[in-house]
Length: 229
Image 1 (cartoon, rainbow, N blue to C red):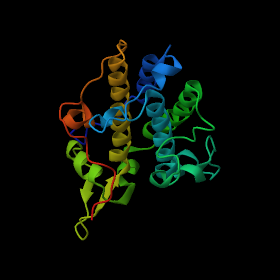
Image 2: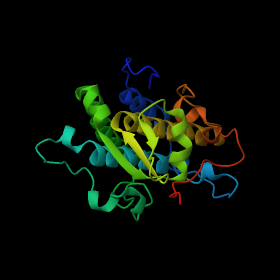
Image 3: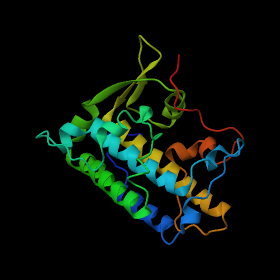
């Protein structure tokens, strides 16, 4: 997001998808499922497969919840997944990923990710910026959101009457979902490096990745998605 509101730019979600395919290409099941439950290595708790599943779930649910009137004005919402199993995502019994009994193979997870990426691409490139900026939502603040909003130049603010609530424009949210998935792509690279595997792409440390908690520069993890107050 450019700090100048007169400069309208959008993340390249399609490039992100190409990078994700490159980084996961050719990995064995053992490499995809490599993880560590060491309490001191929280970033390794989710395997590469789990990271991809979370990315697919996160972006699908985001589009479903935040962009339905723009993507499906006739009300005919597609069902690439069972929405009732994953919305709200925080309350899902699958812990913020797609149902592993239904969506386990990497190619299946990547196909679901492509659907989601196409949706957010469509929303960001076809809806007028004035409409996107005027579209707002209000959410209960979490420690995570309170921490990451420092990297967003506009479109996010804490409620004046209730410090435990945060307002977001759709512009800010479309950038936040991109920065979210880029963190997981970066973590996939870290998981590959931990296995002695080469990475394929160079990721700029912008957005959430400009915060040291997301690159391994601090001993403590990033704040959790737990409600404030």
